[in-house]
Length: 291
Image (cartoon, rainbow, N blue to C red; front, side, top):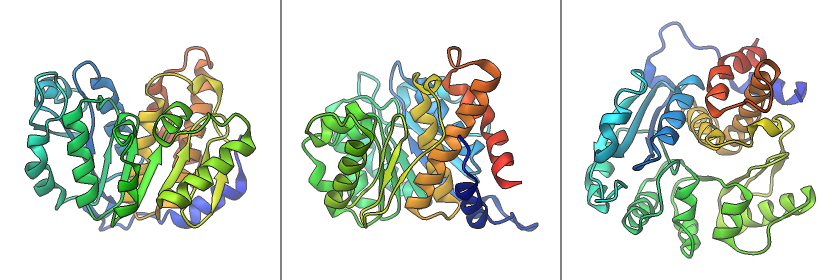
């Protein structure tokens, strides 16, 4: 369901692109994603970031899957990094990744990452050292199980985008069932750990460390399919890269993501909806909101 008040707020924040604009003006987004068997998640996240307006998107992937991802989207730059024998990110890539991060504005990681212990050590080190905003999704969140205190130590802002299963797995407690429980748990967790929390699901909840919350009105059951969360990660990272603050990037990213899903469902039906349809309909969603 569209919301004219939210769309008006998005328009106020989304400035027209100047005629002399440079691609670097719209954010250099670095995405760490993918592992053997999960290349699709990496491709969806990186292309969604471009569709949501990021100026430059670089996808970092384990070297064992580089040849697959290098030919998925020509607009996405792909860089291989050291891989474990199983095809996940190796901790050996830390120095090389940190060096590259010095040229970037935003880091996003998690989609298709896998739960290899070496990968966990790598992303936790990166999270602690990178001083700018980080978006963490999927296995990126799972790799912080038992290590959530590390979120409190970050110098930069952190956006977490768990579905209810990931949320309970990492932060404990019972799975919140009602809308009220979801909002209370999201707000409590955001405050305690100093993160911006996007608790996905029907009426996704966005909560900030300061206590601000928002409940998203867009989206439909057809979006309950693999890969849609990967698309959201790319969208939020792109909005951060274009200058939005974390709460606004999360809130409006969720709104646009859901609207793209609603537009796709209207044309293709909820039953047949796939994650790539959301990327396809993002331009239409943006046109509707920004016109």
